[in-house]
Structures are given as C-alpha cells and as structure tokens.
Length: 296
Image (tube, rainbow, N blue to C red; front, side, top):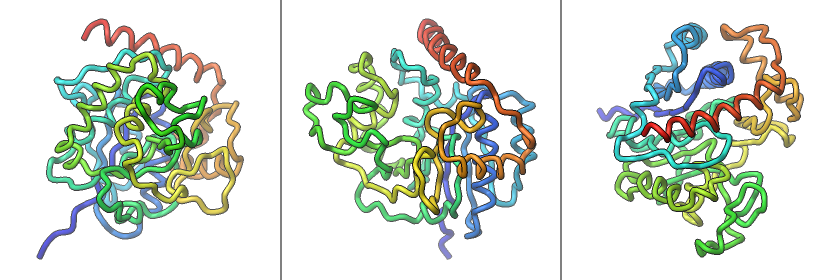
C-alpha cells in the first residue's frame, strides 16, 4: 500500500525571533488534527543550545518531527549572498534554497515565516491544489509590482506589467522538484546580483521577478496581515512591529491570540520589549551582512 507523503514544512530563525517561532510552532501543533506526520526543517541562524532545548520542550514530538539545519549548510556552495542594503537578515535568502536542503523526494513544501500564528489545520493548506503552478502564495499589502511601497521599483526596465500582482514570500506552497528542474534558485540569486540596488524586500523582490504572473493565488486567509481585521483567519502574519514589542500596532485580538500560544511554551509570561531592541536588530542585520559578504 502506498504511503502518503508526510507534510514538509520549513522555517528560518535566529535567537532574536526564537520566541516568535515557539509561539508559531505551538499554534501549528495545537491546530493540526489530521494526524498526518509533519517533518519540520528549521534553518538555525546560530540559535543557542539553550533556546533550541526550550523550543523542543515546548512541543509534543508526537505531531512534529524537528530537523535542525545550521544556516551554513542551508546555502549551497554554488550560490553567493547578494549585496543588498536592506535591514532584513541575510537568513531570509535561505528560503530560496529550500529545494536543496529538504529530502529530494519531497514533491511539495510549505514555507512559513516565524512571525506567524497558525489557526487552522496546516494539512488543509498542504492539500491545496495549485495546478500546474510551481508556487502558491498570497498577494502582499503593496498589491502590485508598480507599488511605490514594497513593489519592484525597476519594473519598467524589467518589462513587467505594472498591474501584475506582487506576492508575499512569508508563506509559500512550493514544488521543490520543479524548482530544481527550472533552476529557480540559481535564477533568483542571479536576479539578486543583477538588481542589487533595487532589493528593497530582499528575496521577495527576486521571487516576484522570477514568478511574475506565473504563481497561484491562495486564499488570503492563509496569510492574513495582522494590521487588518477579519473574523476567522487561517493564519495571522505579524508584519511590521512584532507583538513582542511595545510598539505593536496590529489588531489587539491577534496579539492576544499570539500570547495565548506563547504562554503554552517555555516563554510563558514574556515581558514586552522596547521598540529600540527591534531597531537595533535592523542595524545589526546590515552590519552582519557586510561582514559576511566581506569574508565570502
């Protein structure tokens, strides 16, 4: 009898956001009822052993099997990090490499940012049919590629339709085998190198160029932005200031849901941090990227 494929899920995290990942994984676990096995691949950007053990002890291993991948092993040697000037950490580019560090036999993979809470069974997203497309996603808040905020500012030079939709790369349903066949990862890194001065949203820019008008639009409830209200989202995405900071400005009810799950982890009774911590992290990200690029 043919054994059904287990759910392959990927996320990326560092010590700064490990608290967010703990809440996300707890929500994922609590709302997974189908019984299907989930193999979760965590790209660890130098997460401490203490934090790694706290994450593990916050979860029930019956539903999730965790696979920890050091960030150095997630980036194939043939690819080089682009010289972008954004405040995003260099680890965001690891999602482009998913087809190379998960099992080669996997036909699908779900990528989730750590600043999310999953409120419905992830198996429903896993079994969503995206047809012949190699990527399923939800449009970003910026809407279209010509948006002055978050879009592709050189869309004219690239010959892109200004009204084509702009995807958010925080949640993706992808076909890794097809990505390898089409050299998506290589093309994305090449795009980043050729358009380094335009990489406003880092890897998200490259995906929108590569997949322009060639991706499946998923139900927006699977990537609902926390600043907007809706009654029953499937997944909440805390873009902008995260709920662990005092300056959080999203829907208050969504913040309450975040802490509902966080308080079931080893980070219970977590104290809100100053917004300055978030701003310092952005400065650190820029410095770190310069150092990493200097020694590659």
